[in-house]
Image 1 (tube, rainbow, N blue to C red):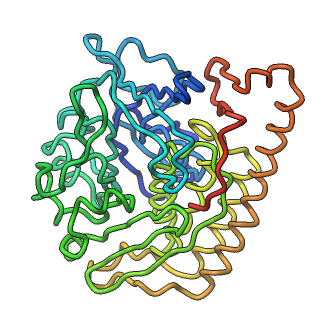
Image 2 (image 1 turned 135 degrees about the vertical axis):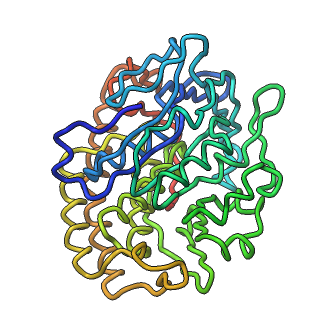
Length: 375
């Protein structure tokens, strides 16, 4: 369990609690390993919150075999191994970009228990397990110590076959259903949303459904809205939903209204798919995004100050302009990635078409694995 570095506290608005294990991600294509990266929703979300200068506390578990340097040290369990996921990509399945991989959990670290959580209150809590590490009693403890709780539905409905392949169970059968009325937001992909009754769940908490090429939708008790996508040159979809959630929560922490915060989530999701593994956000991009967020938040106050029945589902004035300004900012990152790829193409190592250095915070690029897709 860790907290952010002291120097970030000058920018602190409200502290966020992130709960979910770090992972080792192994990406395979045509039977060969093409990348090995730091994974887990917690790593992607903390990466985005760092970019937005949002303070947070991270509770995560790993084994003694954890091999990546991180800024926020996890709990090391001597008797367990770090969770490992293998992602098998199938380039022939292009009709549905979200079905272009099969996930398999080959190692599982210990679950996160209520006693592992810090003994303090938080403004925002995020339950973002990916390997079954979030327990019902742990989520219940989060509800007790956090004013507003966000949950990625994969933390609730993921199960695993005997060989580790990810399977999905219905939300009502997950063991978490009784806690749904105590949540503020539940995020799901369009495929995951099929495993719950959105019309029923939206009566208790806001449901955010991501649609890849079509952006996302937000469903509340008395309204709903669609939020537009950003264009993306997709290389790897891993972590896109996690980065979306990080941008969404980060926007709310900074005081954006729900429509604008959701747009910021779409923005970070689109940046993530353009890189292999954990994305790198350069300093120019981070500064410009924070400046745009600061300008935008002057147009309204955060919806979370209102009761559930008063959440606004009308896009505020200037929302489309905010979308345009973020799109312009996104060119900074796109140009940096393209420059990197051009350098790789000139390098003799491109004969192997894969660069797999020791992890240093940089994404590992797979040169022949590209899709054009907004998120």
